[in-house]
Image (cartoon, rainbow, N blue to C red):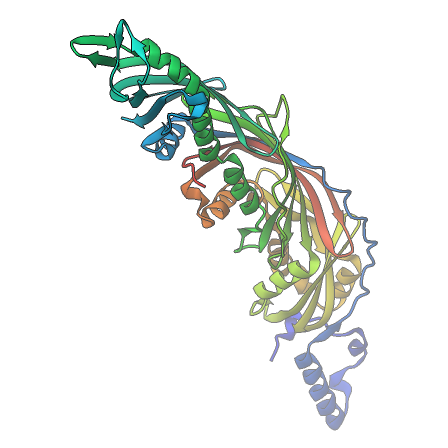
Length: 488
């Protein structure tokens, strides 16, 4: 039995005086009143009309200035992994206009690399194995009898390579041999005569230099596959990222459209390529969306890119998705006040203009529908998008005052208000973390290090369309991307 002390009887019942009625009628009306109260009182105010607002204009493109960095030590390691023991070999006397010269260059130790600006400098010890065909050759005043002679000696070769990137993402090196220092000079022995051949060998190697440089160019070209590295990141970042599952199912959608870069520069042991990614970002509340990834476009070479990011996000929360989430929270929730109680059987959400409308279907001591309205607002201090001035619609309030004013003072309104709120820390502090987690799921975290800093978020514009609440927010900060391991 409900406590009727806290219930307001329907107006027509106040005209009946049970004490003055005949016993049989008194019993009848008593049973009628008890049944009426047991069924709960009916509430059915007029549903407010909201004129849906027009969707927000197309979200401005966001720009992410991301300096991509590679440790020069990692480039050195990649070069050593790529350089075969035999770097170069000419095994014929007949080629190169029958130069009567064979040569094999063998790497004796690790290549040492350093960079300054766009110039890669490298040096390595080599064993030079040569074979000279000496038929009809004279060295000094003596005629040589041997048809050929093999010589082995050692040298330290130094080279420089200017590193540039092309629009097709290829790393274009231009290698030059800058110095050859003999560790063990080449000498030819003819009898007791010891004839130095360093100048001769240097002249011959000079003719081979172009081919040796081309070999080193190919190693750098193949072992620094910038496109492969960036393409993996480009595709991974387009996968929908779950930002928040506890309070709301919020997804971040990244739709990149273009990427530009400056030419690489090295400083303090790091080779840096300033990149700028143009993209359209939005957040969605509800089921995971299907996204068809865009392929990596050609690179646009520029002379300047920003050193920070400016992200415009269209945060779209569909009414149906919000209502579904609130319904789950209210599934077993009972609201009580002074002995009276109700359950919210169903929540519906609509919007229009600058207002959000929440409809509640009640069951219990009150049966029917009531409506609450409010204006979405971002509290930047608390990082929460909540419903400001949230209250019962005037028609609902009038009905509740006449039949069940206890509901106006219950915890129902506060609970609904908190359930509809969207935590904005999902859009600020969690975005960098979740992007990194998304890349790690694709095992890219083993090879790259992506970090964000100075992240702040500012609301720009709100609108209630016919299907969703849309908010345009601006996020700003700095980011850095480092390739920790070069791989194909």
